[in-house]
Length: 229
Image 1 (tube, rainbow, N blue to C red):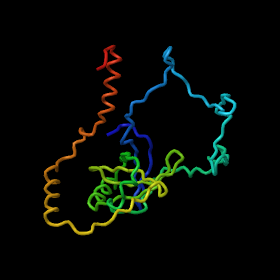
Image 2: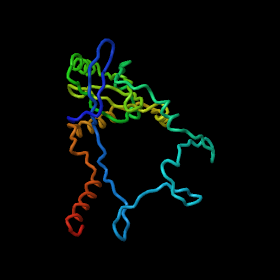
Image 3: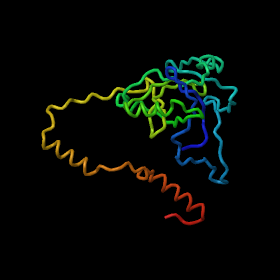
Image 4: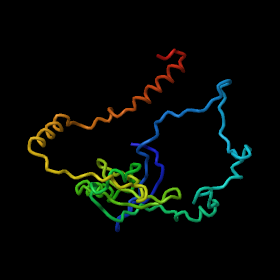
Protein backbone atom coordinates (compact mmCIF):
# COMPACT_ATOMS: atom_id res chain seq x y z
CA UNK A 1 0.00 0.00 0.00
CA UNK A 2 1.21 3.55 -0.65
CA UNK A 3 2.49 5.32 2.46
CA UNK A 4 2.01 8.95 1.49
CA UNK A 5 -1.50 10.38 1.32
CA UNK A 6 -2.29 12.77 -1.52
CA UNK A 7 -5.46 14.10 0.15
CA UNK A 8 -7.41 13.74 3.40
CA UNK A 9 -11.16 13.74 3.80
CA UNK A 10 -14.04 12.42 5.88
CA UNK A 11 -16.18 9.60 4.51
CA UNK A 12 -19.78 10.31 5.48
CA UNK A 13 -22.91 8.18 5.13
CA UNK A 14 -25.89 8.69 7.42
CA UNK A 15 -24.59 9.05 10.98
CA UNK A 16 -21.28 7.39 10.11
CA UNK A 17 -18.24 9.63 9.61
CA UNK A 18 -14.75 8.17 9.15
CA UNK A 19 -11.54 10.19 8.62
CA UNK A 20 -9.82 8.80 5.53
CA UNK A 21 -6.76 9.33 3.37
CA UNK A 22 -6.66 9.11 -0.41
CA UNK A 23 -3.72 7.37 -2.11
CA UNK A 24 -3.01 7.00 -5.81
CA UNK A 25 -3.61 3.44 -7.02
CA UNK A 26 -2.03 3.88 -10.47
CA UNK A 27 0.76 5.99 -11.93
CA UNK A 28 1.95 7.08 -15.34
CA UNK A 29 4.79 4.75 -16.35
CA UNK A 30 5.12 6.02 -19.93
CA UNK A 31 8.59 6.88 -21.26
CA UNK A 32 8.78 10.66 -21.64
CA UNK A 33 11.29 12.31 -23.96
CA UNK A 34 12.77 15.80 -24.15
CA UNK A 35 13.24 17.63 -27.44
CA UNK A 36 16.95 18.31 -28.10
CA UNK A 37 18.70 20.38 -30.75
CA UNK A 38 20.55 17.89 -32.97
CA UNK A 39 23.68 20.06 -33.33
CA UNK A 40 24.54 20.68 -29.67
CA UNK A 41 22.07 18.52 -27.71
CA UNK A 42 20.56 21.52 -25.90
CA UNK A 43 16.91 21.21 -24.86
CA UNK A 44 14.64 23.37 -27.00
CA UNK A 45 11.80 25.37 -25.52
CA UNK A 46 8.23 25.74 -26.66
CA UNK A 47 7.04 29.33 -27.00
CA UNK A 48 3.69 31.03 -27.56
CA UNK A 49 3.83 32.50 -31.07
CA UNK A 50 1.35 34.73 -32.88
CA UNK A 51 0.87 32.85 -36.18
CA UNK A 52 0.03 36.08 -38.04
CA UNK A 53 3.01 38.22 -36.99
CA UNK A 54 5.40 35.47 -35.90
CA UNK A 55 6.05 37.37 -32.64
CA UNK A 56 6.55 35.53 -29.35
CA UNK A 57 4.04 36.26 -26.59
CA UNK A 58 4.32 35.83 -22.82
CA UNK A 59 1.80 34.04 -20.61
CA UNK A 60 0.46 37.40 -19.42
CA UNK A 61 -0.46 38.40 -22.96
CA UNK A 62 -2.72 35.43 -23.69
CA UNK A 63 -6.20 34.62 -22.39
CA UNK A 64 -8.54 31.66 -22.49
CA UNK A 65 -11.21 31.63 -25.14
CA UNK A 66 -13.92 29.13 -26.09
CA UNK A 67 -14.76 28.83 -29.79
CA UNK A 68 -18.55 29.01 -30.24
CA UNK A 69 -18.38 29.11 -34.05
CA UNK A 70 -15.62 29.18 -36.63
CA UNK A 71 -13.34 32.10 -35.70
CA UNK A 72 -15.72 33.42 -32.99
CA UNK A 73 -14.62 33.11 -29.36
CA UNK A 74 -15.96 33.90 -25.90
CA UNK A 75 -13.10 35.26 -23.77
CA UNK A 76 -12.92 34.20 -20.11
CA UNK A 77 -10.77 35.63 -17.31
CA UNK A 78 -9.13 33.62 -14.53
CA UNK A 79 -11.28 35.49 -12.01
CA UNK A 80 -14.48 34.51 -13.82
CA UNK A 81 -13.44 30.86 -13.91
CA UNK A 82 -12.35 30.92 -10.26
CA UNK A 83 -15.78 32.26 -9.23
CA UNK A 84 -17.37 29.08 -10.64
CA UNK A 85 -15.23 26.69 -8.59
CA UNK A 86 -17.15 24.51 -6.07
CA UNK A 87 -17.01 25.33 -2.38
CA UNK A 88 -14.01 23.64 -0.73
CA UNK A 89 -14.86 20.69 1.51
CA UNK A 90 -13.27 17.63 3.09
CA UNK A 91 -16.44 15.52 2.98
CA UNK A 92 -16.77 12.42 0.80
CA UNK A 93 -20.54 11.93 0.95
CA UNK A 94 -22.09 8.58 0.06
CA UNK A 95 -25.62 9.32 -1.11
CA UNK A 96 -26.72 5.94 -2.51
CA UNK A 97 -25.70 2.31 -2.96
CA UNK A 98 -26.05 0.36 -6.20
CA UNK A 99 -25.07 -3.12 -7.43
CA UNK A 100 -21.51 -3.02 -8.76
CA UNK A 101 -22.76 -4.74 -11.91
CA UNK A 102 -24.99 -1.71 -12.59
CA UNK A 103 -21.95 0.51 -13.31
CA UNK A 104 -20.78 -0.14 -16.85
CA UNK A 105 -17.02 -0.20 -17.58
CA UNK A 106 -17.21 3.04 -19.61
CA UNK A 107 -18.07 4.97 -16.44
CA UNK A 108 -14.87 4.12 -14.55
CA UNK A 109 -12.05 6.66 -14.71
CA UNK A 110 -9.24 6.54 -12.09
CA UNK A 111 -8.89 4.40 -8.94
CA UNK A 112 -7.62 5.49 -5.53
CA UNK A 113 -7.04 3.62 -2.28
CA UNK A 114 -9.33 5.00 0.43
CA UNK A 115 -7.79 4.14 3.81
CA UNK A 116 -8.79 4.93 7.40
CA UNK A 117 -6.94 7.83 9.01
CA UNK A 118 -6.55 6.78 12.62
CA UNK A 119 -10.16 6.38 13.79
CA UNK A 120 -11.51 3.35 11.90
CA UNK A 121 -14.81 2.81 13.70
CA UNK A 122 -17.29 1.72 11.04
CA UNK A 123 -14.72 1.68 8.20
CA UNK A 124 -14.10 -2.07 8.11
CA UNK A 125 -17.77 -2.80 8.79
CA UNK A 126 -18.71 -0.72 5.74
CA UNK A 127 -16.13 -2.52 3.60
CA UNK A 128 -17.45 -5.90 4.74
CA UNK A 129 -21.08 -4.89 4.18
CA UNK A 130 -20.35 -3.72 0.62
CA UNK A 131 -18.46 -6.95 -0.06
CA UNK A 132 -21.29 -9.10 1.28
CA UNK A 133 -23.92 -7.25 -0.77
CA UNK A 134 -21.87 -6.85 -3.96
CA UNK A 135 -22.61 -3.13 -3.96
CA UNK A 136 -20.80 0.16 -4.43
CA UNK A 137 -21.44 3.46 -2.71
CA UNK A 138 -21.94 6.43 -5.03
CA UNK A 139 -20.06 9.41 -3.62
CA UNK A 140 -19.46 13.10 -4.28
CA UNK A 141 -16.55 15.20 -3.06
CA UNK A 142 -14.48 18.28 -3.88
CA UNK A 143 -10.73 17.93 -4.24
CA UNK A 144 -8.35 20.64 -5.45
CA UNK A 145 -11.12 22.94 -6.68
CA UNK A 146 -12.87 20.23 -8.69
CA UNK A 147 -15.99 18.22 -7.93
CA UNK A 148 -15.80 14.46 -8.36
CA UNK A 149 -18.27 11.61 -8.52
CA UNK A 150 -17.01 8.18 -7.56
CA UNK A 151 -17.83 4.60 -6.68
CA UNK A 152 -16.63 3.38 -3.27
CA UNK A 153 -15.99 -0.37 -3.36
CA UNK A 154 -14.32 -3.03 -1.19
CA UNK A 155 -10.79 -4.14 -2.06
CA UNK A 156 -9.92 -6.99 0.27
CA UNK A 157 -10.55 -5.64 3.76
CA UNK A 158 -10.15 -2.03 2.64
CA UNK A 159 -11.96 0.41 0.37
CA UNK A 160 -11.13 1.91 -2.98
CA UNK A 161 -12.86 4.78 -4.72
CA UNK A 162 -12.92 4.99 -8.50
CA UNK A 163 -13.77 8.36 -10.01
CA UNK A 164 -16.65 8.18 -12.46
CA UNK A 165 -16.99 10.00 -15.75
CA UNK A 166 -19.83 12.46 -16.25
CA UNK A 167 -22.93 11.80 -18.33
CA UNK A 168 -21.70 13.84 -21.31
CA UNK A 169 -18.45 11.85 -21.45
CA UNK A 170 -20.00 8.38 -21.72
CA UNK A 171 -21.14 7.40 -25.20
CA UNK A 172 -24.05 5.09 -25.90
CA UNK A 173 -23.11 1.62 -27.04
CA UNK A 174 -23.58 0.92 -30.76
CA UNK A 175 -26.79 -0.86 -31.63
CA UNK A 176 -26.22 -4.60 -31.86
CA UNK A 177 -28.71 -6.96 -33.43
CA UNK A 178 -30.10 -9.39 -30.87
CA UNK A 179 -29.53 -13.12 -31.17
CA UNK A 180 -31.93 -14.70 -33.64
CA UNK A 181 -31.96 -17.85 -31.56
CA UNK A 182 -30.70 -19.06 -28.21
CA UNK A 183 -27.42 -20.97 -28.09
CA UNK A 184 -28.08 -24.70 -28.34
CA UNK A 185 -26.74 -27.23 -25.83
CA UNK A 186 -23.74 -28.20 -27.98
CA UNK A 187 -22.59 -24.60 -28.49
CA UNK A 188 -23.04 -23.78 -24.81
CA UNK A 189 -21.10 -26.90 -23.75
CA UNK A 190 -18.19 -26.00 -26.06
CA UNK A 191 -18.10 -22.43 -24.74
CA UNK A 192 -18.16 -23.61 -21.13
CA UNK A 193 -15.38 -26.12 -21.80
CA UNK A 194 -13.24 -23.38 -23.35
CA UNK A 195 -13.76 -21.07 -20.38
CA UNK A 196 -13.05 -23.92 -17.93
CA UNK A 197 -9.84 -24.87 -19.75
CA UNK A 198 -8.47 -21.32 -19.51
CA UNK A 199 -9.75 -20.52 -16.01
CA UNK A 200 -7.16 -19.62 -13.37
CA UNK A 201 -5.95 -16.97 -10.97
CA UNK A 202 -5.42 -13.33 -11.90
CA UNK A 203 -1.65 -13.01 -12.45
CA UNK A 204 -0.67 -9.34 -12.40
CA UNK A 205 2.84 -10.12 -13.67
CA UNK A 206 1.33 -10.91 -17.07
CA UNK A 207 0.29 -7.29 -17.59
CA UNK A 208 3.50 -5.68 -18.78
CA UNK A 209 4.06 -3.13 -21.52
CA UNK A 210 6.50 -5.03 -23.73
CA UNK A 211 7.10 -2.07 -26.05
CA UNK A 212 7.96 0.21 -23.12
CA UNK A 213 10.32 -2.44 -21.76
CA UNK A 214 12.13 -2.60 -25.12
CA UNK A 215 12.41 1.21 -25.23
CA UNK A 216 13.86 1.29 -21.70
CA UNK A 217 16.31 -1.48 -22.57
CA UNK A 218 17.45 0.51 -25.61
CA UNK A 219 17.91 3.63 -23.46
CA UNK A 220 19.86 1.69 -20.82
CA UNK A 221 22.11 0.10 -23.47
CA UNK A 222 22.89 3.44 -25.10
CA UNK A 223 23.51 5.02 -21.69
CA UNK A 224 26.17 2.36 -21.03
CA UNK A 225 27.78 3.08 -24.37
CA UNK A 226 26.82 -0.24 -25.95
CA UNK A 227 25.68 -0.57 -29.52
CA UNK A 228 21.99 -1.55 -29.37
CA UNK A 229 20.84 -4.54 -31.35
